[in-house]
Image (cartoon, rainbow, N blue to C red; front, side, top):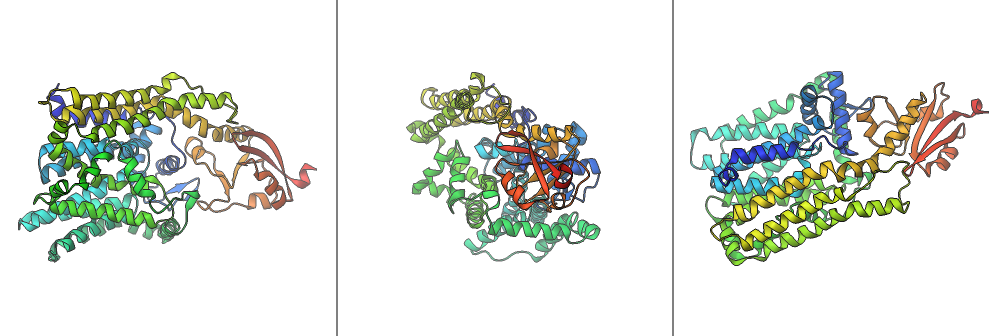
Length: 554
């Protein structure tokens, strides 16, 4: 058994198996998962892989790589939640292998394994690898591009003839990153590489190698951007650039926060490894990064972290997954410390292990209490949903599992024989605990919470469709029906879609139903006096209205 838990192939298989466990056991989450699911579904059903659309309208917020992969996943596994999330899980597997590979190249197999374990069990990267957010795929290709540049720098410094193959590899991966989400897929690795070279005052670089890299990158991104331009003109590019401008200058969907928002994200999302980063406050630990084999990569990865924090501190829209690429560098710094100082920490019973246990206990108690709090609030009539799930003590099992797993991991540090190393006494138990915790959430608490928050959308939508009506979302938006149902929805009052106000300003021969917030009835009556709005039903703060032509209703 000890041999198995030192076997990288076995740990890779176990990691991927636990990533896939429960991947399709809960509905897609509004908004992002359902947006990307709806875009992938439209692409798969239409067979048009150069036209991204949602709800019958052009979708220009993201390039197509994730949607291509999800469409292929639908072909393999069917059109469902598992298939929609599978590209993220696949990127999780790729990230695990890639981190180990780079760690082995830079230092040793032992370091590569520690780095892979730390990254793959960090809270936010693990969540992203199990959900249909584009960011984990995007981050993985940023990392691979960065790995290529780091190894290119090392090989070219030694004068190796085939160093250019690493820059070519980096260019290919950066092109995939740009096809996944956008220009930061190029900007982050290149800017970090230049910062490293400037910090070390090494300015010479092969023009031939740069040219090869540029050609490969341009060919890669042109596979979509140029093809789409030739087929459809500037429509996608203009819409994409406009969305980037809005992200930078506006707080979209009220996703706002202080300038230090992403510093908090870094600390919380890196659980359970966050305490070990504070060990760098000691000079002797900082010296670890000045070793010859780690100095240049450390500068590169520190530049990456600082760049991401600066960019997203300026960006007005604040969401935790925007900055999530910096968990690759953060896990590197934690892994260096754990691999180099692990024995010392174990011998001295450092408080870092207790800090992990204490923070984990708070998080565990939160998840243990959630189902009981939810059941109490339901009993008090706090929720106005017409149908609510039933929570029970079994929904507290993930929190109990997290509490027991982290407690045992900390106890191993203090009780196991000293001949056992950090890997077996702490890293592996924590890693396995986090993976099992997230998997168990997928079967217990998460489906019920999502049912409570999202199912009202489908209930109102289905009521309208059953009566043979067209559906309008008025100053309210859910992508939930766009993935799970096939009927087109008319949208009014959302920056994501063209307004279809004519359905309320012109006479309609068909039945029209409107879904909006409960307080929208008065506003609608004032703005559209030629229509009559008849309440049909309410559910969870939303209202379903039948829209009548005033002349006919009389």
